[in-house]
Length: 160
Image (cartoon, rainbow, N blue to C red; front, side, top):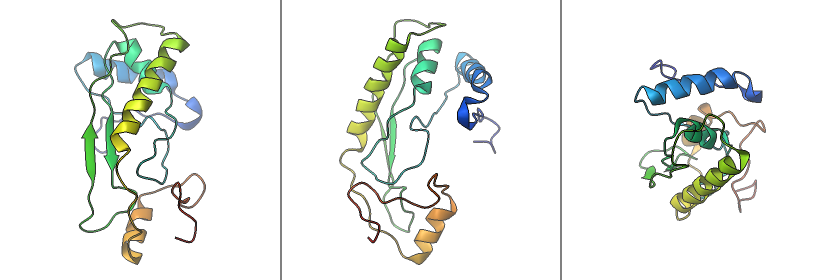
């Protein structure tokens, strides 16, 4: 996204939050589409959705636009001839019109609806077996794990 010049930079610790929100709102009002990774971090497990952050719901309520849940499965491990599935859910309207100050209750309700929609979109995708040495190397080349290394997927032991 940065290469295309359309990224909305957001830094950890909520630094730059006001500027990022203003930039995203400008893009939306100019007819653009803003994609947000609502989980806010990488994780292992294809059929798992981490608790979503409030940012996407807050932005949608402020801008008066729906949220379209998009689930991408099959990227936990890269490899040749592996399936990557993209599912697009139905738009979820947060409110009837834009609100300059959505309440925390409105945001929480919309987050819960988005969370539920995403969980349904990923529920039936099985975790894939680990690829060979090159596939593991290639996958980890693109990943920065907060824990320092890949954690096991839910239901997976470290040794598998």
